[in-house]
Picture 1 (cartoon, one colour):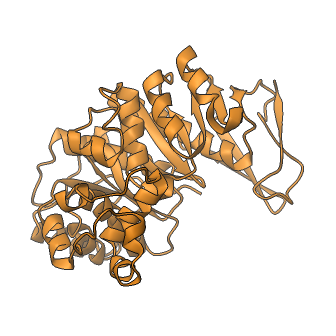
Picture 2 (cartoon, helix red, strand yellow):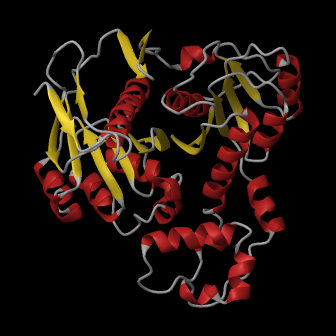
Picture 3 (cartoon, rainbow, N blue to C red):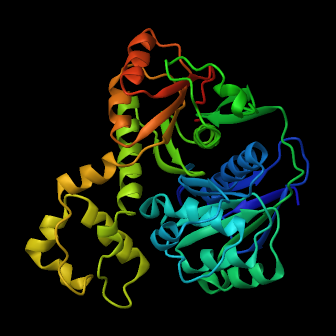
Length: 392
């Protein structure tokens, strides 16, 4: 198949719409179920590149959860702790395959943003991974293959209309890529930059110690940023992104946005949140929203309005600002990557509040000295990669 007609483009009024390979080759994908649309394919193909890079860099199965052409989460297949199993709502599923662990992590990083995601998997989708996907609200999945059991499970979603795409892992695009804007064609070389530990060798802070786990997390953050709409930053810990800030005009707003998401991920592991007394049979999305409201400042409004009775068996105590700050202050060893240099030290000050100890950024700002000095003040280790990762 050399082209595939789509229902419409980004919006219903944008017709006709299709996908094809410019050089006339066969499309490297097969649609096994559903009818993916324009945005589905944008997410799928960007996500596939991200997980391919993660697998190449780490040697581990990888997964990403994409929404509107930026990842909401990305991870590699490290085992899950009991706490992570609980906050990702897979504690009832027994031991999971490495690929399933990768997707549970990618989905669980920012569950609100991942609602209705498009999934990309680096490896053949197995039964465990399909079983997690089945229970979540999702638009589709792309992978290099699907086991018979996995495909049967996925075809049950959306009354048989769930989007399942198989991609040829041997496909390599042309060296030049093109994009049309307002009838004008842009041409550029593909961003085939290899991201690995070699980019982390130029450590510019007094603290030169970046352990192997932190290097892995920095690489994960940088690969995630390679496919995230700029400006962007990514916080990472334990083999996964835990907070991604994308598409902001100000870098410090990216750091704040992603930092708030990282804080949410960290606070969800606090015993006070883990022990919330939910009503029986609450829907997963309602539970996610309730947790975010409980962690956020809106919970006082829920208490006043009596809304807590809809989701909780008994009225939980307020999670005070002092309790939240105390928990966050106990967290450490978070990695932070940035797709361009930090122009001011306010970015470092905000990152510190979310437990950041390791940073990778291109460097090159006229205020590099001030940024380095701020890192030294908090004993952070920062590497200048010399590489910008804008993605548009």
